[in-house]
Image 1 (tube, rainbow, N blue to C red):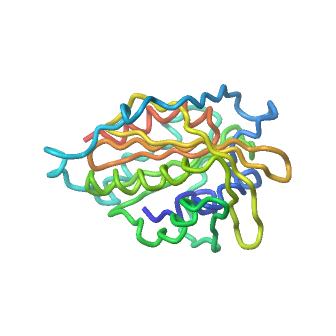
Image 2 (tube, one colour):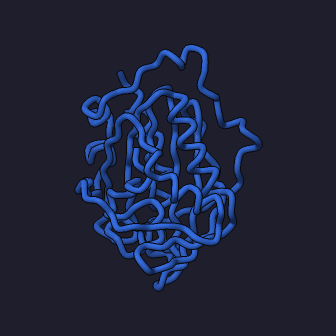
Length: 238
């Protein structure tokens, strides 16, 4: 996984997530017009939601992209009302973060955060621009997956607020730790509220690792909560 292209499903890099409000698959604008969602921000106590890789996990081999793709969510898995927005494979403009030392370090380390295999796609719900999600599956050794995602989410959750920059446009963001589903070996997440020109936008990021594969859903909190279980179930089928 290349962090810079983490949300390329929307045509946007991870650190430009603030611009999702104007993209094809945005977050919940919190104005009652998107998919309804009760946002819960209480994090699990300590690291109870993490089973650290080790022991038998050390011998688990990564999957290649072809096998991963067969485990990616499709329209048939989601039900009616969805439109797929496939990853176009294009590179993104330079982006960065300011106002948070951990996020600035993460931005500088993006080129090194590559995993062995990745596949991704995205979905709009009911044809609206403020309700959608991106889905990504990654595979690498369990220890590598754990380390990469821990670095990403620890950085996001280390500062209560910071700014994203896409090109020359800064957007303020605040972060909170959401409740995480009891799935997989490890769970990671963050909830971003972005102060865009058209009002606040809420975007939920959840990653679940099981052995040598992980599923990440990003977008409208209600859609992420609804489909993360399906994504994890499908990615772990042999």
